[in-house]
Amino acid sequence: MNPRVLKWLAPLVVGVLFLGGWEWMVRAREIPHFILPGPWLIAQTLVRDWHTLSGSLWITLQITFSALAAAAILGLVLAILFAQSRVIEMSLFPYAVILQVTPIVAIAPLIIIWADNVLLALLICAWIVAFFPILSNTTVGLNSADRNLVDLFRLYGASRWQVLMRLRLPTAMPFFLAGLRISGGLALIGAIVAEFVAGTGGRESGLAYRILEAGYQLQIARMFAALVLVSATGIAIFAAMSWLSHMLLRRWHESAGEQP
Amino acid sequence: MATLSGVAKRYGTGTLAVEGVDLALARGDFLALLGPSGCGKSTLLRMIAGLIDPSEGSIAFPADAAARKSIGFVFQEPTLMPWATAVRNVALPLELAGTPRREAALRATDMLARVGLAGFENAYPRALSGGMKMRVSIARALVTKPRLLLLDEPFAALDEITRFKLNQDLLQLWQAERFTVVFVTHSVFESVFLAERIVVMAPRPGRIVTELAVPAEDRATPEFRTSAPYAAHCREVSHALESAMA
Image (cartoon, rainbow over all chains, first blue to last red; front, side, top):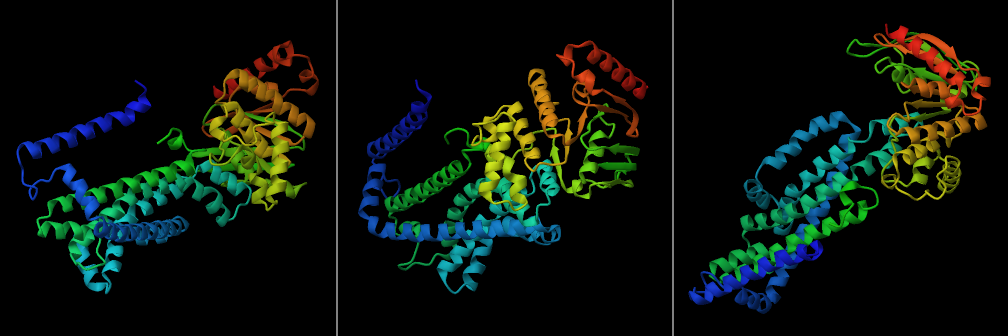
């Protein structure tokens, strides 16, 4: 069979079989839907509660993408700063590592206390999680410029600015994009985890709060519906970042030689 | 053009890479630095380029101080920017010096045509063969019309057929423009085919052992590469290299 067709068909068959088996088991064993709802009921709930859920999805998306944008910009700027001066890198890098290795669940309560706006607190948490891969990847990228090319730039009397713009940044591009791909997923995880910790409701609450709320009310179908949206968001972010990376690198970089 | 006197290079580890090198480069010379690996020939070339400073001695450009700034360098690998097309790679030295983008691109396109790559302006390096990438690299070194062209074993990684062709084309470019060339190689055959002056070096510490000449009238023989004078020069250079290693 054509491998391209198989690539899509094989996981599709597995998915259909899994969902079908799930639905059949729920019906055959008459499992109550407050313990395990069938996929069909979850789909119905997703449509019925779409109004509430889409509002929460929007909030979660806003937090995730703001955090990712802030992580990308600050990660890039800080990495450039690191590449300009070893002293700056040596002084600040350990703290970036501390920020990375401390579990976000442990810092989140503090941040929620300090930030007077819940959305801002969630944004900061998501940012902390998403920030490090971009910083560390881009730093490595900026320092991996071809030594001979560096010599060539020196030979022609290039300024620091020219070396940065024409050599170091293009070299770092694939590294930065790989970091962005990891951070996209992490920003979503950060946004969800922080909201679990914050646990505040109201109109301005994201998908994580919908999951908590549905859990308290034993509306398990709704819980699953919110979960489906979280997963779909994660997949969409990963696909979007992969696409972006492919479009930017396909002309020259080995990683983008084939269709993703 | 350039005078090297008592040049030595000692690396931080204490290794003496080059010692006591005296060499005078005249305008229009085609000089080969020939020797086994580790004899300091690349180090010497980088010192002439100003990429590294000698630990002792001096490298001066007495007659022509501007020549120090007018240098083209070709590395062992093509060393192209993979994110840039052939024409943008060749235009790089001009753009770094502040030439407007359009003019730089025009001159780069001309230079690509001169190294036989007309029509490949917009190709990215990964779409080019090893020989073509090396041609782009040579075009980049020549685009600024340098007075001194330095090449560091540029064709060592290429197959013999491609290498012969590139040797010939380089020789033609030199005969047309008469820039000064210093060509680092470990191939006796390549040095005899290309250079008028062959400087033989020996390792530990890197030093110049002897210098041999290949007169222009010998090179004028048709099919020089298979002629009797070529064979005689190769034998002579091989002997010099052998006694240098002993």
